[in-house]
Image (cartoon, rainbow, N blue to C red):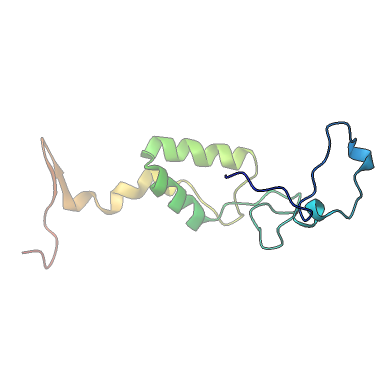
Length: 116
């Protein structure tokens, strides 16, 4: 921010001026609220997490299976999950893919149809 030259267009309040003395419709108040800003909801109702949002959150945070389960469990305790949201699949997600994985010192795909 650079200093601006003083002009009659820019009002300067003195240190002795009280807040009550500033007119309510002053120019500074006209920019107090941004109509385009939608970051904060006016609703007092909590925003519930859907299954898709939970999946994205777990992926974005890079949570382990146990951490994801703990997070979703806490959200459920606080009634922050949408009614159709489930979290038990975090426990069983690997069962669908376990047949394709082999683990010793290395984890890799095996026996995948069409794999060369």
